[in-house]
Length: 322
Image (cartoon, rainbow, N blue to C red; front, top):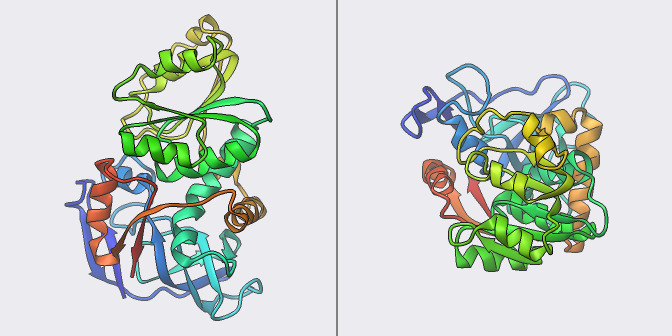
């Protein structure tokens, strides 16, 4: 089969599309013939060594949807031919092996493309709004990169939980998208002082929580957007790593809480994954969360998809099709 392998942390130059052996599922695993593969910013970061992974050379990617072709020992949750979506890589390939407890059946109402585009990002949104900071009705939240793959799901999920949602994005088109996908207000961070606008929108009070996947460019400003005893949840660093922080500053700015959150630390077990996935699929089915797929690329064009995502020219989610 064909699969991408990363041979060096040299950006796209280190990525090769190669012939590899079809993997065999071990105990507790399934073999999936993939029909749709999600693209994530973590893969852009992985190309240059900013995201953890196995030693090189290695595969790349973390999520995909498809059809069950083989069952490992002990797997009873699925049958051959089932449509499933799951976490676990490497997923930039025609077929892959995944842990059965990290995968779920795709409801008939949800397409393979949407399942692949939404799964990892939706699980991220789930742990952010339910665990890293449990949103309460009436909370006001700030979401950076509101028009991104995670952002679109996160904003809608927060809105469904009763929050007032303020989003930031980097173009008029992205602002319109954010307003159509859960945001009550949207700020162009390239044109406006987002701290001043947040204070204006909250009558000087600030927000209960900031969800920040941007990192270096927004981190300090995000702290200034928080109200007294507010919470900052950092879950990515698209603009680069956050500089060292003097913890005393958190006291000076209002006894703030800062968390650096990661999905594996909140959705630890298969049961955790199943519960979050069930909540996500229910929202996709009832329409409280919709996912825009900006572009679909053949698997052979994965480097272009990664370049487009890294250049921040896309809105919503990207999908690869083998």
